[in-house]
Length: 311
Image (tube, rainbow, N blue to C red):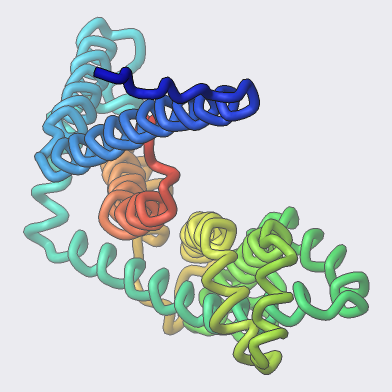
């Protein structure tokens, strides 16, 4: 029987076939790497859906260690107990303040002032920050002034505010504004500076107006820096509030945590002083854990920036 003709492959065709096989094997390897990455992301999502008890137990354990060290320091008698009261003495003072209703009044008054002052500061600072970030001449003119106001201790405004507004809540709110607004403005400007120029170009090509560009493209893209400014603004507003409440006492100003701290100083009662300090610290920690922490974590997760983080 006649044999079948043998098909010869030209050298050029051999190179094409080899390249195709190489691309196929490389593509398979890339596909396997992609599948492994997706599996890893899915496992990360499963892990994040579970409760991480270490985030709760570790802070509690650290707090317990600090309380034990505090009690040991008091028990060893390095300082007189009237100067450094122990945890049990402070706890007893908490109970007394609660029974008198002063604790609830002080926390509510300061928290209400802090939140209202901070929200008004955000409403003022956000449009101003966007305007300065978008208009170069305004930024060159007012940018150094905003930065100077940010580093100026807000307690310096208290005497002037008392002269202008008297012993009223307006004095407290003014000091809070002067502490929070510059930080929020600078945080927003910093976030806008980190936006890639292509975002603005795409918005302009799609026909967005300056207002739409600012609200729908620039502000969402600047959220990481803006959120940092909000956190710093809250910290400055809370500190400014305490300074104003400590100095501006009397008149129609209510009884806040700063007033409690000042009262403890006037009475030379360290249990009241320590109670006020711990309450001020607790409010700051709770705001971070319940408000800013979850918002920041969600923002980082949506942008794929949470992987490998220790948060």
